[in-house]
Image (tube, rainbow, N blue to C red; front, side, top):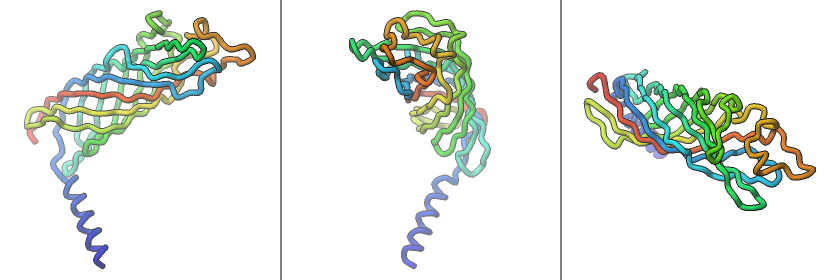
Length: 219
């Protein structure tokens, strides 16, 4: 009986902590920097390496509440979404970086600071170590993302927040990797170990973001 009472008190405190006035609709800007690595097995002679995106992510951020008694709502982002990943030549130790930029649309849920979302984007530029790659050789972006947002400051007019967000690509980066592998001339395949589409990179990343949103309605 004692433990039941303790559990009831704990659950009551949890409910009270999340049962609060929701944020009103808002619109603002977000800036972030991402680091990422390919999570796909490399061909023999290569090794995945971590890389920081060549450009910061920047875009618009909107929020629409869907509950009156808890911090539950829909986040919408429209942004320049940048990914980079490293590829190491196992023989020489040299690390090369491929970078891609996408215009992406990211709907998601916000619940008491927790973020869950999905991104769709189309590529607008790509390069490896400063050498341009044809955009047509880069697939569209589909990724799942999740994280946590913390308000540095909020009042009746605005919110200033930081967030840490993880992302995982759901599809490979390169279209027809066997033919369009950007590293095939600088890290060629090892004899008797053929490079194929199963080696097509797919990135997982973490981004640190800061956002400022103007609140349309008083809390």
